[in-house]
Length: 73
Length: 242
Image (cartoon, rainbow over all chains, first blue to last red; front, side, top):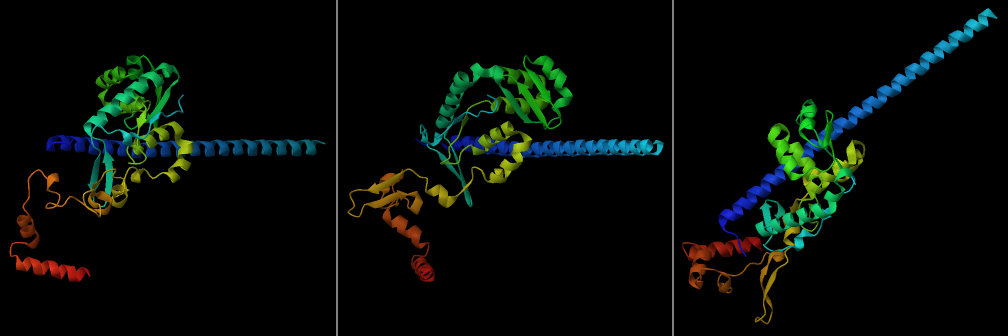
């Protein structure tokens, strides 16, 4: 079977529209997931830095405590 | 269930109407004819109803957020029986989203229509053809949505979304599944062979043409308006080719 010109044009229009829409969705999805990924990385880095600060503060406190005890004795 | 993708493969074997090769120099893409398209849609609906819908409550679908969905989250949740959640980058839906729900939600909140459609599409069987590289972009998008942002970073290196579904003309020509041969000819002359660029001859294969073409007319067209001058041109071009 064959198509008349109008039928063929309708099919081609639909194909082009769907193709454009899916490619646009794909691009947006990749951008969005990239942003999400980098946000997660930043969040992890900040959490790690926070932990390092807490550990360092605890270390300094312990050192002070140790010197104080040593001076007393 | 949320990590599964249902795929209707090898749709190139469906042939109620011819497939269309969309040629745009120098590439080609394939698209089904209207009847084939309709048949694929019916198959898709059937498998969605039989395979996916019974497990609807286990489905968690996800899509990217490109319309600030999170600001309308409460309103959408009050309209819908199933639950949506969202952040700045993605929208997550728990449960199976029916077609009627999509239409209703899209009517109530037209700004997010594409999000509802994408969530609905992500749990439909995906028809595709590796041979014709047809609909592979949709398939990869469905996989992206299931992978999440962590794994996507590795997956992205393997798949180039811009080149999906597009092939070179040479590659596309080899996919033709029709060869017409004149069996009355002792040399089995090829009348139609897309791979070799052979098409029915207007004089020898007149039966393939709706309007009969006279041999003289064809010769005249070949030689051009000035006959001899046309012949000279042809012979010159032959020499230059040699």
